[in-house]
Length: 79
Image (cartoon, rainbow, N blue to C red):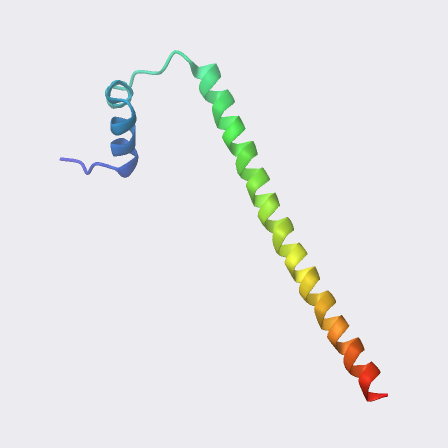
């Protein structure tokens, strides 16, 4: 008896027929649509990653600017 994977449970809960087809090795007829959907999901994932990296870079630049501002203000007070 083989273990049941989480992806199988997700497929079964989403669509029992899709789970049955996959279990029996039947290929879906809508291969072009599936490939398009996979491509769109990958593109969206890259956009999410880029947005996160851009946000992190922006926060680091803001922190750097605040450090320089504090250093400038401190040196102006000392003179």
